Amino acid sequence: MPPEQRAAARPSHLTWRHWLLATAVVLAFAALLARLAIIQVGGHERYIEEAAAARMGVAEVPASRGAILDATGYPLATSIDTWDVYIDTFLWRDRERALVAAAQLGARLNLDPSDLYALGTSRTIGDVPVLRLLGYEDGLDLREEALWGVRLLPSSRRVYAERELAGPLIGYVGLDGHGLWGVEADFDHVLRGKPGFIVGEEDPLGRPISFVQSTTLRPLSGGDVQLTLDRFIQAIAERELARAVEENKATGGTVIVMESRTGAILAMASLPTVRLSTLDLNAEELAALTRNRAIMDVYEPGSVFKTLTTAMALDLGLITPETTYVDEGIAQVSGGVIRNWNFTAYGEVTMTEYLQRSLNTGAAWLSDQIGARAFYQYLEKFGIGELTHIGLGGEARGLMRRPSDDAWYPIDLATNSYGQGLAVTPLQTITAVNVFANDGALIQPQIISQVATREGVRRFQPVTVRQVVEPQTSQTMAQMMLDVVDNVPYHLGRVEGYRVAGKTGTTLISTASGYDFETTIASFAGFLPYEDPHVTILVKIDRPSADSHLGGIVAAPVFARIATDVMEYLNVPLPQQQVAAP
Image (cartoon, rainbow, N blue to C red; front, side):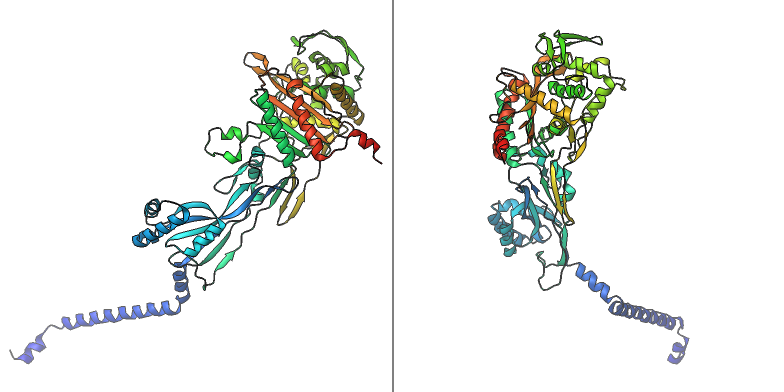
């Protein structure tokens, strides 16, 4: 067949395939051009943003935590600026540079370079912490060195200036920047503030590029909380409490010093306690040591409570200080037996004498005259069985059975009259006794003086909760408490130059088999000067086991020593000087 005929006879479908392939190539190329056009024109800004985002760094700037101040404005807790040091493990994949950086960083921080190298190369992504709370100036110097893959982030360190004082009350800040207990926890929302942020481009070392604009959200500093606590009076209270616990071989104790007229807490000390200077957050006993025992622990108040019972009878017009009853040393009450603490009978005694001798039979006799309904109504007015609303977390209400409760028995009226069979906090006790320093008014205890935030300063004023007894009743009761101290020979609660109104308490501690006469809580509560009360003080010593376990011997001297130093510190004039003043 001639060549021309063979060419004409070649199948035509091969030409069609070529055209199909060519068309597909053209269309694909056109689609690619269209996509490039879209990227170039329509998605230009978005892709620039995504590329920039890949180089952007976000650093949180912590807020400066507010200060906790004492009554004089002295900072009990404050914060200083520091740095936290990290290694960027991604950058330390460059082993040569990592070795150099580890050596330089180790020399700067006095750490083993081999340990740093192992830490920084233990993984290949993310930052690993090296050191927290590096000093601010040291951190600035380290940043200037620009070590490969070493990052520094701003942080802060909490400083407790008086590290041995008021640990359970002030509290502590954990590694996460939140308060763990005390004022640090209760007012964490005020103290913490709000962190800020810095958003900007970084170079491969994680350093901000200075000529690139960054966005900064400034942190908002936390507010300051000022307490009514006076660090000097707190130191006096803690010193004398520690001395008393040691001398009396006691298991612990509590001291509260209150400004009589305002209810301001000037000192709140307890043992055992946490020492912030030697704090171990992993210690098994941490929860027990950080308890603010003045508001969380309850105890049977004992004979201090006789002042409340006597005031009720006075207020109802049932007695006067000269009213008498016959003390036989023992009394049958609702199928139970009431005995005096010393198992002694005194015959006919006045109400003043019953209080001086702290006779259980006298309190039981009075409670019978008062009646159950009125008795428990008065206790509620004194704040027994209710929160004081001091403003601290964890406050206990105490335990008090009422006639309406199934667990209440008629003998409870008698035992409650002298402070057994019910439980109160030390703060409830001192608040109730303080009624007699305020013409019968219950003053709310106060631990917060003011809170200063960006919105302004909120000052807390003294609060009169209610009138508990008539002013004349209160004055008579104060006179009887004065006689308790003045008319008892060699009373250990006396303070030279001042007259003290007070009452001792010796509480038998209940056990599974009843009350143990050798295991007690010794206490003393009182105020001074009698003529113009400045401070009300409660001393409570738990389980003294030395020569004596009585409140008049164990707790009263502690009261006297604290009161003497507080009067001198506050420069309270002697009564004679008060009278002579123009």
